[in-house]
Image (tube, rainbow, N blue to C red; front, side, top):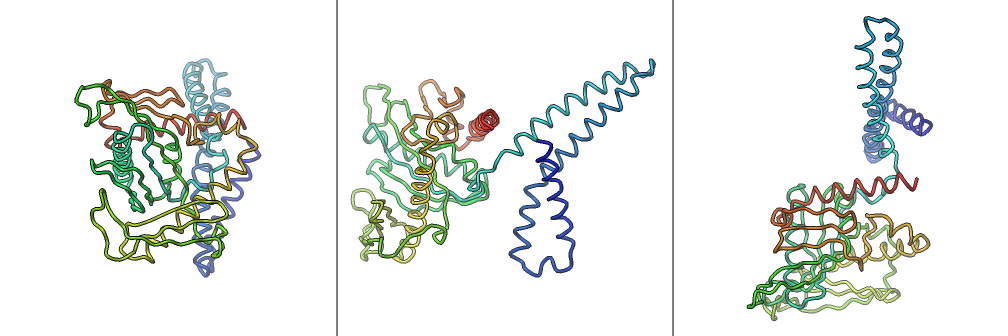
Length: 351
């Protein structure tokens, strides 16, 4: 680890020296890239400096402990510096873990009603509301791409982009099957039902970064409509794209313009094709991926929302919180922080 730290500090100092050159901003795009790289290295450099200072303080305390009058003071100083150095060492281990190159990207979230009929559609709508409120808390924006509503206010499916720095780094843990246990609005006998909804979180990819041949795409247009055929457009502005080689189908009907709907479809298609390619690459290490909390296997039940007991349980890490109303209102940070910590611990163990 010390060799890695030495290399990081050396590279950081090189970037600082470049930033002071008179012609540094002659190429704005390159300058911005180097400044982002410098900003990413700063926490490591700062933690390394603090770690080095703590080690130095331990050595000084050892030397001064030879004086009987200073011995007790030095023992306390040494213990405090040792504890600090151990904390900083663990922090540096985490900071040096390989970064997910998609962590800073926007995401495309797909929510689908699962088992449970109309109640699953109502739960899918609750999840859409939860993520919308979480995005607002983080200062992110929501861009609705496609939604199929039901007459009772649920959604059969909802596709939307969450735009904001670090969106994927937080929301990537949400992929999987979400289960709800509650008394449905349609239940007259007061019985608790169990329903599910599936969430998929994809890093939003630039269309240009994924190979999509025009001849591989079949485009269909249709009139957008709401639940029960409401809000029917008089023009066919909704767009459906079929990627013939993969069979992937995406659609968008939220914009009034056919051109805008097609552009959103292309963004969704690029992200889906990227995900499919990643799944192929990762198939050789499926066992390892299943041991990690951040993999987001879509067919795995990851969380239960039990309304009668007021609890939310994340099954991957065994975390249970008794604040279901707050969670459904977008208070997800405690769960996501715990998942991120567990993911880091797993990666440290595998490194």
